Each structure stands twice: as C-alpha cells, then as structure tokens.
Picture 1: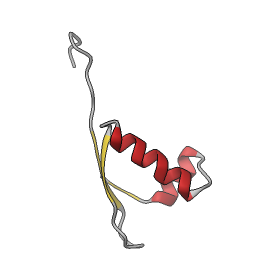
Picture 2 (picture 1 turned 45 degrees about the horizontal axis):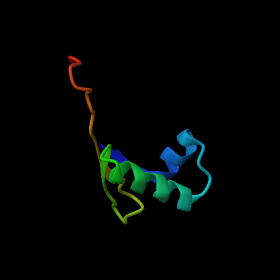
Picture 3 (picture 1 turned 135 degrees about the vertical axis):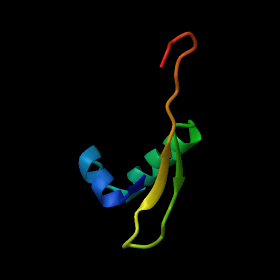
Picture 4 (picture 1 turned 180 degrees about the horizontal axis):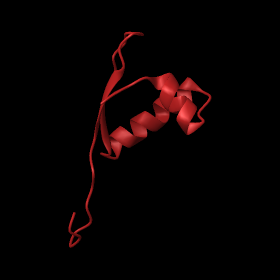
Length: 59
C-alpha cells in the first residue's frame, strides 16, 4: 500500500517527524512491515505489512 507520512502522523497522533521515522524503523526492524520511502511529495511511500500467526492458531 502507499502511505503519506502526514496522514499516518495525524491518525497516530504523532507530532514529530523524528518520532514518526523512529517508529517506522522499529516496525521494520521487528519485521512487521517493509518500508520503501518515496522521496517525492506527490507519491506516497510503499509499505508492505506482514501478519504473524502464532503457532497452532488457524488463520
């Protein structure tokens, strides 16, 4: 999916871009997402989300 940082920050009530980037990096490091920044103001960054299923739990 494509996301814009200002929209995610609004929904998550994050007011600092430094905090936003720290949390995105954390999510990426923990393996919940894969983040590909866009560097273009008119195009959102690409985010791939992964769903982890606990062992023995049917999806």
